[in-house]
Length: 374
Image 1 (cartoon, rainbow, N blue to C red):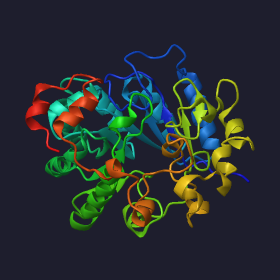
Image 2 (spheres, one colour):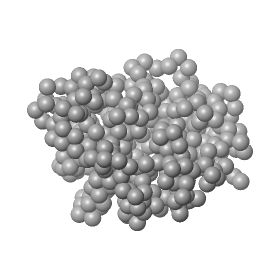
Image 3 (cartoon, rainbow, N blue to C red):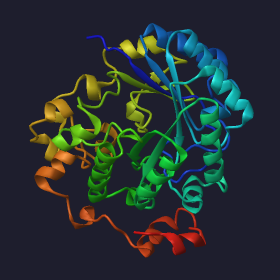
Image 4 (tube, rainbow, N blue to C red):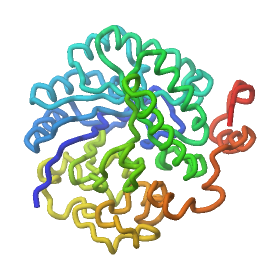
């Protein structure tokens, strides 16, 4: 069976000018020595075109920190493919705006993790980040580029969602994606949202779709929901994880995975320096966890679920991180069985509890103790 590659997320650089507490790739301030060259990147673009790719998301690190990001993006467009960016916006200035305007990406994603500078800057590990992001949004809008905001939720910023909504409405931002942080890279398991918070986020998204239609277009990430009627009203139909089926992830060193969030070595399918991307994608033995899926792989609640053969246990990464192929963040599971335990049913955590979780990561600012709202 041949698989059609539709979307690629390409981490074109490891370098980042922030140090986010939830970074799945654990990016740092300098680039790896083995970063792909411009020539190698252009060869990859040509291979992606041959594979029929529709859209390529350039990410990092921060993709704007690569001096040749414009050349890579221009090559993607010259091959008739769409190009998109995922950025923290810290590298946006008049020069990068000119390049982006010429490229005209279909999506320019910017991360906003809180509606307050003290909280956003803390999460991002960069003083002044929030102020720069707000100014960058305005500059992009003036240049005719509509920013799409991405909010990654964990226990610290869960209660910020209504405030972020109001901020985006004030800024005239229309596109907003809400996703939850998983414990890969720097993200500790204890900071992940509970099942109760996941349920409330789904209700929040549905409220936005119902009561703010035309003002803001909000989506849950593709791992929000699964097979309940409630879920379909949030994200549309779910046909299982598409890593290695229609989606691909490429690392800055040429490592190929079905999804960049699949950080374990067993998910590495090869490297473009050793085999062409076309050969890796067309390898009948690649991406076995999805291409050769069988319901016997399912565990826990998913093992006996009537949607098991369609859903495949939800997000492979979230399931892997539980030690089985069964994602606990499932609206259908919550509807049928409730929350896993009393802790997972909680939605509010007092500042003392949050401080205990996050201070070991980095010291919380004094403003936290004045402004945090459970």
